[in-house]
Length: 146
Image 1 (tube, rainbow, N blue to C red):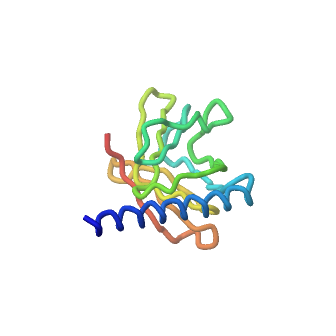
Image 2 (image 1 turned 45 degrees about the horizontal axis):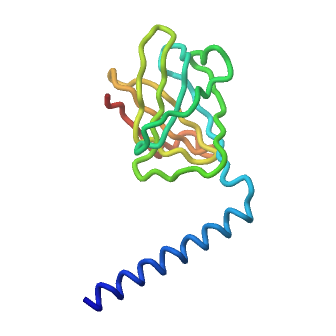
Image 3 (image 1 turned 90 degrees about the vertical axis):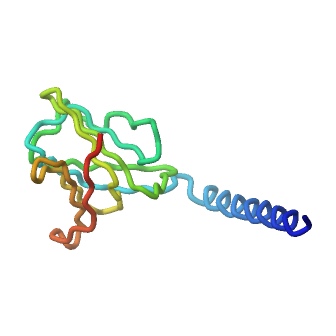
């Protein structure tokens, strides 16, 4: 019984210590984290709505498009800032196409200064993440599940 109580007290103390550390970080950086990713549309269709969310969340972001449509073969910078989640299973990207169809890419690792190329291979939607310095290096591939 004493061991369980001792373990419980230690876990609470650790949690409080971690909370205090994270509060210091927040006060020193008013804006939080900021990342910019270039998205390239190679899906073969124009996109009318583009939204993202961590894989483990239910709510989608607002439409990230600033124009009426994101055209095929166009590149678009996407900037995220603030207190960004670090999802273990990556992010989801939802595209609603102007032709009425939609797709969701899952398990995407969004990192600063990278390029995400959205396309289809063998009829399946895929995304390739390329580092800015090494455009040919593929570091992540995500597939769709609905």
